[in-house]
Length: 274
Picture 1 (tube, rainbow, N blue to C red):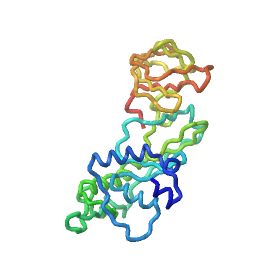
Picture 2: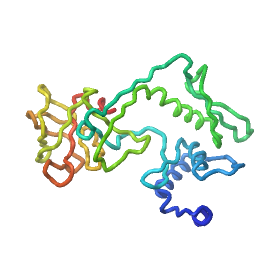
Picture 3: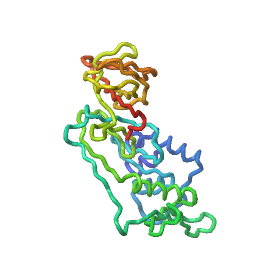
Picture 4: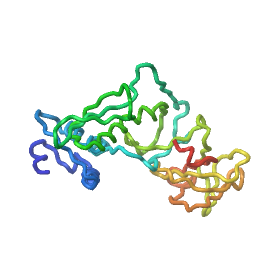
């Protein structure tokens, strides 16, 4: 740390999100991941971090004024929920990408065997005829190389639909790579409302629900934008419902200091999370 402060003019505590970087280092050490590469030319600190982190399927990221790490991998729970209540009217756009002749059909990652220094390759999907080629410095493990090929290929498979929208008055901005949940009439996957009042697990909404609803799933948006897991509920009236599961957040009704709780009501529940 002292050397970094003296030679680069950086104070690690104010430049880097040290707790997150140390947590990433601990994860990588536990997994036995290493970075075996010699820098033969001058490089920026950012580029050196990028090369080292990619062997662990990660990359440096500037967030909230500090340098941290974005880790690839499954994101089980969304970190923020967006609904018509906080999406600007008319800003929702959906774009579809379709395959065309000449598109690559896979990813080939070039890595180097640590014992022989001979270049090896990992291809995904297996048997791809025209994969795009990527050389990854410092990777000396075939399993890691294959994981990297899968990660690079995943956006081509799952990124055929892109959703964009404008939101306002959000105190928190998701990081690139975060999982979020989006509910909108365009997808016809749920109704959204604000919490007008509550008593225990009995909720009163600020608008009517569609006719014919009975057993439903409910997701609540916390004050920082984080959505809860899906909670089982029963509709008891035009604007009322009773939540069967334990409510894990502090509820806020309209008229109370702060933003009221957003409520998403869906008949398909977990399947409607995008």
